Image (tube, rainbow, N blue to C red; front, side, top):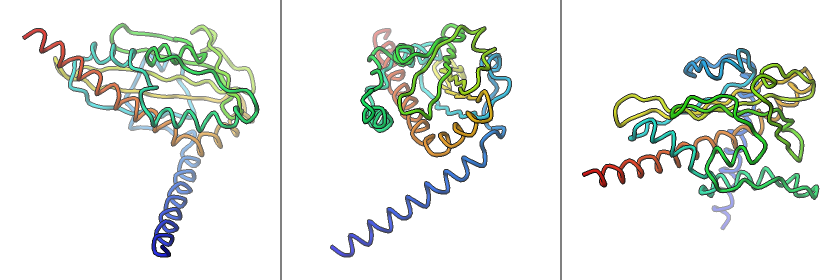
Length: 233
């Protein structure tokens, strides 16, 4: 028993040390350019300048248009990991007696829109950009959608502008790279300080959601492609 306790203690200490290192690095990198992200002209229209840029990608054995459709229609609620992250994030608002709205299981895009986000731009069968202005450091987070023009010009103090993408880039007749990118910028010094703390401490959950999203869409897109190929043969 004592050996198990020692092992658990060491594991917890290592995890805490790793998390502290992550927070320190994320804090340091806040506001710095992220050269590993590919260019995105559609997103550049709304974020020529940004303080956070986070991108993830996954190779998918399915045509780009099919993968994009699968991504729009796949529900994040299918993932126990995502549900757990959302559940942890909602604890403060539930304790305050104001539980957050629940996303409907209608696919990633509709789930995002039901939470208050809006569509900023879209290239059919290839990419969609969704955005909102918000104060994510609050216990009860409210996302406010704006028209593309108002979003680009928004500068009211005390907020953060956030946008993220779903994008499928074809690299062959039956293969694509699916990408998602998040950008954010604060509207004043105080909100920048608050968001920097928020991002440093809570971005692991956001990145985990992105990873799970790509895993889900890869599975669904390849399933659909195999079904369509079998029906055509």
